[in-house]
Image (cartoon, rainbow, N blue to C red; front, side, top):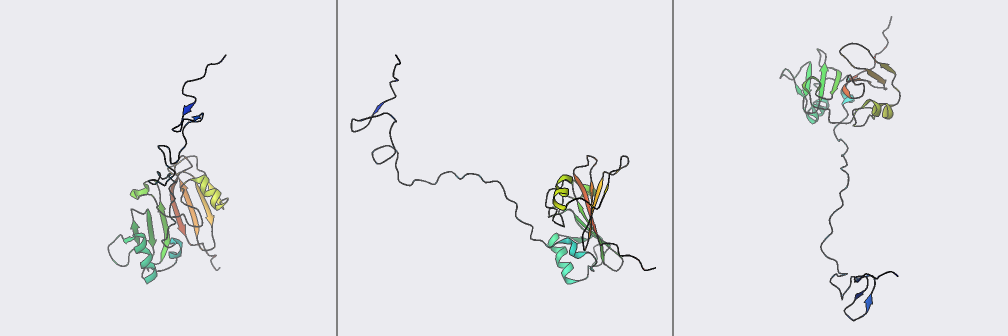
Length: 195
């Protein structure tokens, strides 16, 4: 025969036996009244969408335009030469670099990752809907199959992928592990030359 545990049945304040223990309520130590707020459950950190303007809109525009200068300020881009008209504009903390021709027209935009050329990691959204994850597999899933892929087996550079968009070309160069982004180069599409 089984023995009953002594603490299995408890006597309540009014002398009744309660086999399930005391219940919260007015006659117990616990109360049904609202008490102090319970500890908040932690929610995963959600990254806010980047509100800075898209950098691809700078391609083909002159750095002397007021709108271009405003975008440069929002990204923290400053002239490398210290003058108003320069061939290079850099934001080391944001991981962005612009190249312009002699007339000040933006020809190329570089987005740096993993300490490339002394820049911090690019801290915005990858253009074309590439998201914010600087990995090759993520770019392929976000942007689709690239127009061109180059996987060199020797040399100083890792592989690269190129996507064509209506108003810009995105070239992604990866580190030697062929997975992490090293640099994205944005240029205008090449127009056919008249014969």
